[in-house]
Image (tube, rainbow, N blue to C red; front, side):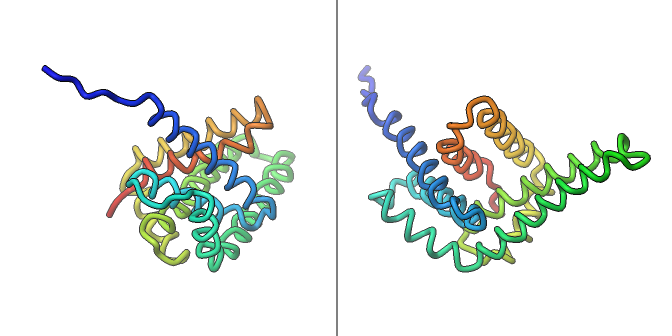
Amino acid sequence: MQTKSVDWRTPLAEFADCLLVGLLVALASVPVLTAAPALAAGCRAIDRSRHGIGRPLWTTFWADFRQAARGGIAFGALAVAAAVLFAIDLEVGSVMPGARLLQPALWVIAAVVVVIAVRTCEVVAVRELAWREAVVAAARVTVSEPRGALLTAAAVAVSGVLVWMQPLLALLVCGPLALAAVATGGRE
């Protein structure tokens, strides 16, 4: 019986590509409105790497970023506006009567919106849909496949905890988050 020899550098190269995607997404997300197109480009780079196409990563990422930025900046602006409104609502709502009853519901709604936003970036990257159609497809997949939505929410939560514990990880955490989005993305 002959066993297949696995080169130890292959998984290490895939991990390094994942971290490089995280750095590229962080770099492209410096203007906050470009965070969604950057994550979509990261998802596309991870998807290409998964299928063994698209080298070198640096140039393909920037080409994908430019393509995703066409409609993605408006999506990013809406996401930033929603996050600001949510933060204001939590702050103002904390002094209102009945706030203790409504805050858990607001957090659940925020988690669902974040999962749909991450999945929208994945749908734009993998299925190459326009951003409007991608939002609808991501919402449909999130409702139809709650297990994948919970895994995506867990990936976002772990990413948040890692950045909270070590803020320097904000430069790398988007790569594993893009990997999680592609891995849990629903296929219609």
